[in-house]
Length: 172
Image 1: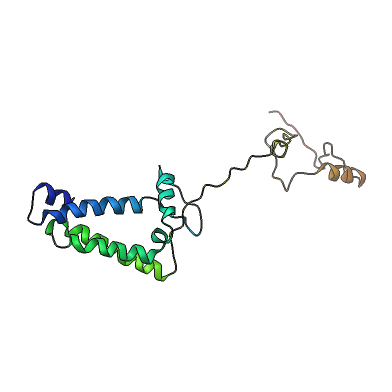
Image 2 (image 1 turned 90 degrees about the vertical axis):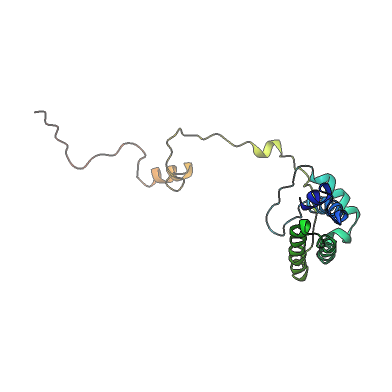
């Protein structure tokens, strides 16, 4: 924003404002593609695959965080000579220090590669429908068909049970 103000207002040293506009566009194009995370999944930005192809062409120049740190620092220096662009200078300097810290920790930019889509097997995804209607007891309370036959052999019937306490139905 400061570059636009400095260039449009024809400040003294307005050419530093024009430089900061170009540097800002370059940094936006460099930073747009997200890198792949070490753990978990990463959502790809809209249209990222095109810019990722461009960044992959430059290889270690765009992948290495040491190079990115010094690139950001170098881009921030000329913009520091104009008051209108001093905020952008500060932001690039902070980004440079963050990249340097990430590089020291051993991180680097890795592109998000599209995963090959696996087609599900038709026979493997079809399951048998449930044999008894809802509501169903929990899985551990359900008896297997083999258990019912074993229980019938042992003398326990699967039919209704007799109540040992007599029930007296009194109507008043």
